[in-house]
Image (cartoon, rainbow over all chains, first blue to last red; front, side, top):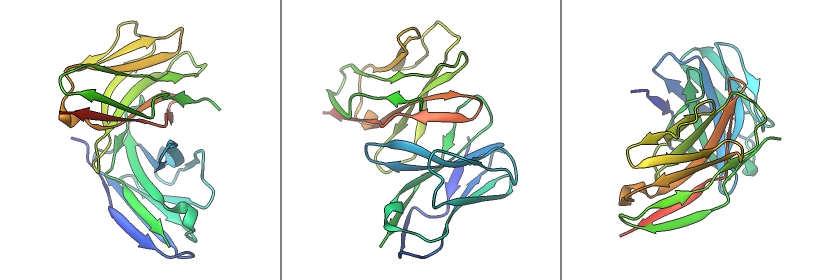
Length: 111
Length: 113
């Protein structure tokens, strides 16, 4: 079974803090994704990566950056957290042809 | 922007009955895939069923089946013999261009005993 893990289930940070969300997958998938999930909006793609050190902007990249130094690990960085970044963050990975495997999510609260 | 629309924010069904969740999409691509994902309360999102657009036959997975109407760009999910464990958020998604998956806003399904 594919396993995608995220470093924290719940995280509380203060406005202006730098925040790191980590995601690790164990199936040697080329593609990895970061989404945020908000009620009524579904999942919106922040960034994705199709290879080590490669990244592509999704629909809402503003205020976020990512890092992929190793194939199994994809990090989402909030350089200066703001209250409107309070959300559920989901990481996913895939080989090809669409099927994505999701992590358990990190619920981030920015105070 | 191309979108996926789920017109039912919330639905409920009695245990053992059948329920259908609606989804429409508007991709203009020729080759694409469609998905239903399930997110149980406080649990991980998992794939329920997937449909390749080039296949005419509707996909089925045990109690889950789809009604894929390509011309109408409709992709509904039918859950037969609903169980309490089916209570979840259900997301419809389409996928094309090798990496660009779009999700609908979700339908919250409650199965009542």
